[in-house]
Length: 208
Image 1 (tube, rainbow, N blue to C red):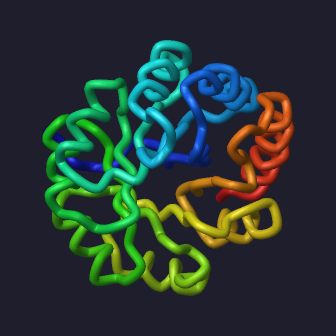
Image 2 (cartoon, rainbow, N blue to C red):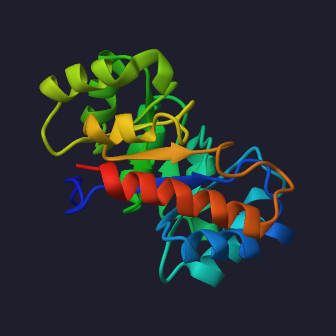
């Protein structure tokens, strides 16, 4: 199986931490309407695999559905069975990365240091989640960019919002994970859609 990067960068990923299965289709559809092409359901949400399955059935033909806070190989296997195509983690776990790659899934391991980033790349990752991104900063990301393989993309997560998304885009981020600035538990689909449209406009205007 090839572990090379995809032809295009990831772009924005919606992180729906705390969403319930009863909310997922309405909120997910609103995000797709606003132009999002990747949605993550963290596994510490209520009944996450149910939400992933419902979301994949509803919008999986036009949007990449994924699992977040994936901490074990068992999580990878269950996420794939539910319909996940991306595997997002807060840490650099070689076994999780290799399990995702072996199943033709796209891993997004979290890294806070260049050492962790290189370990992730060695395990097959071609998209690195800078987490928490505010501890790395745009200058740090650009320094990583100078030494990592050119096909590896970097995506800030944690603290990214409408006030700094343009800065990350201008610095060369391949995308960003957007959490509470986009969705908080209980938010209505229309509220999420409006936030998503604003964030997508910022990204589209400033991404390199």
